[in-house]
Length: 111
Image (cartoon, rainbow, N blue to C red; front, side):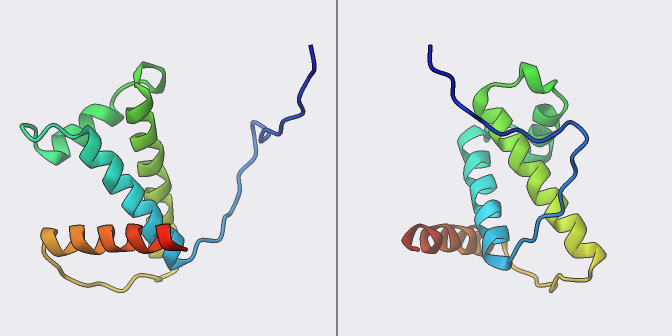
């Protein structure tokens, strides 16, 4: 049987990854898309998120794992952006936010 060489991070590796606005918005759009595919409209979004992230990773299905992973990634990006004062605060309706995320996702697919 032929072997294939792969790479994996060391257990103690911690990386500091540079992220631009486009990547951040693409990641948020992917998270939003993942959320809409998973979310049961009968449950409040906050309760749903808590129910998913309270599970053990090994107990999640693939879609929940994707949602959880993207949540952690967006959370870390936002934490670092807050620490470096890299945010611009704006107010918009939920519908406007949804439109903006969908537009960003569509634009990133064209690149």
